[in-house]
Length: 181
Image (cartoon, rainbow, N blue to C red):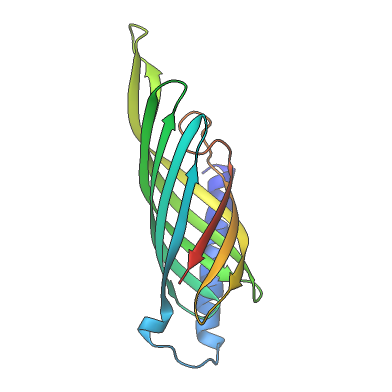
């Protein structure tokens, strides 16, 4: 196991152990199942030399008031206007989030994205390949609540297994802004 996978696994286990400890020690009011479920996601648009559309919904479950886990999906459309080419990227993720303080949280997730990228065949022709590319993302963020349950969050993540050729992200550093309801 390489260092980045070991680091991700360690963080994931620590977050999980923290949740178990809270479940055993928290003396909080009981929440109904519906009160524990939340949704949200990200939506991004970019225009210029590259047209970029990102739709990333998520659903989570508050295991304790400080700890939650959930699932998400992502669809990205990219159009490279100078080259008259486009690409579709899609996939899913599982995540765990631990509220460190009232507005700050730690975040860990595993994602798998189906990515198109050009590659040369044996005759030096460009062939577009599609592969599932994993991501192990760790980081944290800030949440600004408004209304009774909703809010906006800003999350900064680092992909421990970033692949410069196949990754859908231009950098191992990923910044997301989104809404929770």
